[in-house]
Image (cartoon, rainbow, N blue to C red; front, top):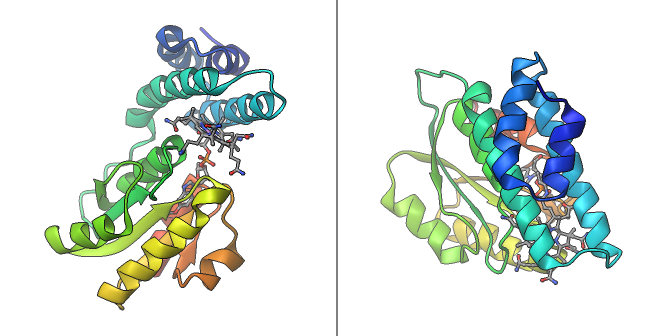
Length: 209
Ligand code: B1M
């Protein structure tokens, strides 16, 4: 049996070998998967604050991220839906120059569980790769781009505009911590979502599902 506080401490201190068991313990104790996830997201906020304050450095951020990913692995089957019908394919990636993938992975998980067939291009994805992926995969109905740094917001713009130039009717959704609905509209995206949970509803709305 574990508590969310224990899970959070393990994520914050980067104890990746112990997080999975603690998350399972929290689930076994009857805690909701979404609450455990929210706790881990909060922990990454704490890690970010410590980084900003110069108390920790990039390696500590990285091991905290690894720990969170281990926790998410345990939550994934619990949070995944069982959609029998496909809504079509969604191509998703974190834009060029950006290596952050936890938020993107959560969005992939939520879109998958709401019925999209996901093509995950990973991180540091150049604009052209999104276009290639639309060309190479069947029935692509949506392109989803994450930008998690203020410095990669221009890359987000390039990704949206490159996709729109090649496929004017393709729906594109964007998100990530520095992105606002206003910025999304300014760069020509069709939709924006502030978090993984709302990304699924927005994505479905965009394709008219
Ligand atoms: Co970096 N990093 N990082 N980092 N990192 C941040 C983002 C930062 C805020 C930390 C800080 O200074 N307080 C800061 C950015 C500041 C800014 O942009 N102005 C920062 C920095 C500066 C950097 C480096 C430049 C540090 C350096 O090298 N000096 C460097 C850049 C590397 C690069 O990308 N080129 C860097 C590196 C890294 C690591 C590689 C070490 C690691 C990432 C590992 C990984 O992802 N596998 C890392 C981490 C872990 C963080 C923090 C601590 C945590 C990020 C995270 O996973 N958050 C972060 C601090 C913070 O977030 N407060 C920080 C949890 C995640 C669930 O949230 O990613 O926002 P998020 O995703 C959310 C929403 O944004 C939304 O839904 C998600 C879930 O609800 N969302 C979407 C995301 N994509 C979406 C798409 C949608 C819709 C919603 O539609 C398509």
